[in-house]
Length: 184
Figure 1 (cartoon, rainbow, N blue to C red):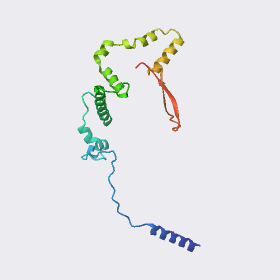
Figure 2 (figure 1 turned 120 degrees about the horizontal axis):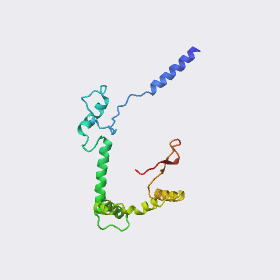
Figure 3 (figure 1 turned 180 degrees about the vertical axis):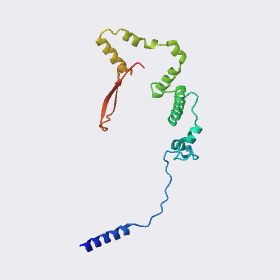
Figure 4 (figure 1 turned 90 degrees about the vertical axis):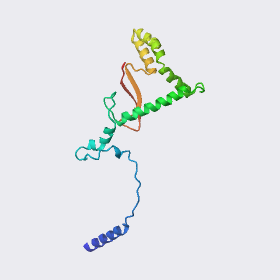
């Protein structure tokens, strides 16, 4: 019996070894991992201070701006994105021969209106007068419900906000989620 087990083991070993070919030298290209090695501080040993090792040069080359209390790559990305969006909006707002009713025309008009600080200062809160009047007229519970419903439809959630998102327990389904609203 041991002789048969030995033969089976020997045959399996030969087959396994025979299937192992010579290791082929493959040239692999360096893939972009999203990690910029230039940001690392090679003077720091990773075993002494891993954070400084990984981020040292980025921290040295990107001091916290005077206007900020903290600074990270996400803040840098936000600033660059905001600057790009501003350029796009200014270009769209400056275009003169835009088709009436087009998205470009709407975006340009909206941006121009939002940047007209003289008009905004002159108008003050008067564009919101109808909303304030409706709030002032609340006397009964049905009045409150009507005003809250109206405010919800224009994007103001005085008591609660609702949105549709993935169900955290069943990620293949969507649910309506609510969270506390407010005035701020």
